[in-house]
Length: 171
Image (tube, rainbow, N blue to C red; front, side):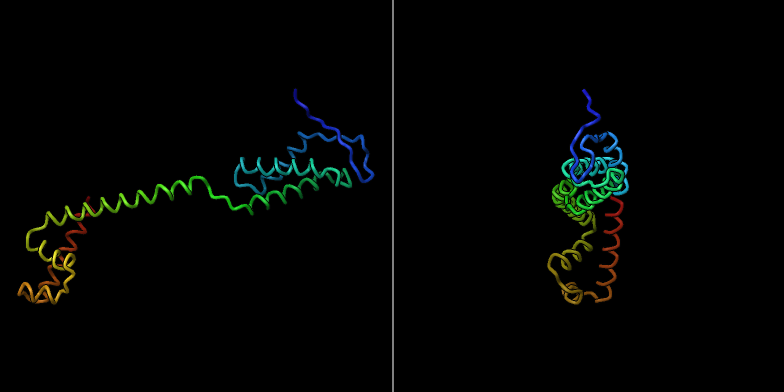
């Protein structure tokens, strides 16, 4: 059974026999809520909260002719309350939680790809990469150890890094 009209007593000198059409009140609240909401669900939540507040505070309405503007003020206040609530979207926390595992997996895959690309280099280039990045030697120290000019070390390292970048970009 659907109830569309509810009677209530109004204080403040209003006619106690006056009744409200709550379906009409719902439409007024919903229409006003769309001004503040981002989507229909949010507008319905705002309108529902406003209707509950209107039901509880119906005795404070002084002029029944001003009911629409009174309801609009309630809807505005409920919308501001809704906006003020800081609730993270459920997907934000889910993405963060899953993202940390994804980043570790991605880093492991990238490292594996890098080591595979280094393994495909010729022996001379592998030696340069090992000395520079695994043993953390400077270019000058590499030149002294291998007995080759510093410029040659710089050029070879530059070419090896470019080659690795190309291979990793292709993969």
